[in-house]
Length: 301
Ligand SMILES: NC(=O)c1ccc[n+]([C@@H]2O[C@H](COP(=O)([O-])OP(=O)(O)OC[C@H]3O[C@@H](n4cnc5c(N)ncnc54)[C@H](OP(=O)(O)O)[C@@H]3O)[C@@H](O)[C@H]2O)c1
Image (tube, rainbow, N blue to C red; front, top):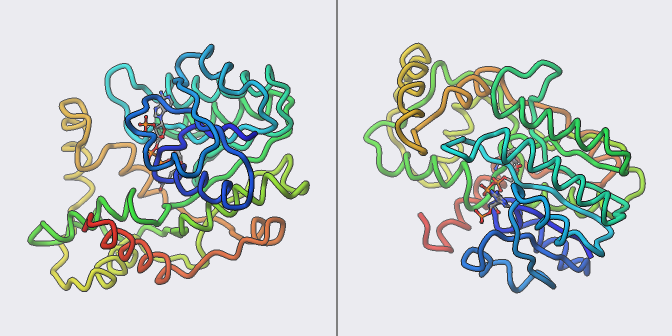
């Protein structure tokens, strides 16, 4: 049995499907029965729990040979802080895996993590990675770039592209990114659980092409068949607006952390994952077209 936390999320749904289709029995940690509907066909068992409640994670991990830990938040609000959910949540998941005698822990981290992160999001990811490395349990850590699929970032930006009179582009738009298809991310997670060489390794998960953020958005627009003007919004304007809005609402258009991470760029080396796990990432155009088609099929575009 493999415990997957964050199984109901954008990436988690694809990972549980990939694992189940390959014959791996999955137990999903879910916070509520209400959100578990879409993954029910793929999971053998559902365990109710919350990563902020260590006892619930410990109970969910019992009898599992591996734990795949995906839970993290992109934005914090109220008690849902990076520290409580992303950092301590990972600490609890690692401890649960150790207590269960699991033989493998697979962590979802993020591309762009450095030794000295400056954003709250990355600081919490660093603590999560450190907890995994210090635990003594054999591990694999993945650091993905923007994940492309029917949901997540593409769905959010597609909504903007459709509704806004001009498509907003942060700053110069020239920040390098290397988006990766969600199906390739899921495949990498499955292969990590199957391939002994993945133990003790940290892999970037990135697409084959490095493009600018603006070219990535242009690719989404092309896949949607939409031609519109673009409006470059100076970061000097975005930063203070984001700093105010993120204190007022849980869902501002952008947060100061997101702006800083975009500015820093988000690129990596897909080579090691390709070599060890046999995952050749799909070209950006194929990934984006697949995401837009998926959104249309599901009536979300
Ligand atoms: N999407 C990307 O482009 C991207 C890029 C790089 C890294 N990542 C990483 O990939 C992972 C998954 O991202 P995602 O985009 O799939 O996120 P997501 O769609 O927001 O999913 C988050 C998942 O975590 C669960 N969750 C949240 N708080 C929880 C808690 N306190 N206890 C238990 N479960 C909780 C959610 O459950 P509910 O259904 O109950 O809300 C959901 O299943 C994260 O670690 C993220 O940092 C994502």
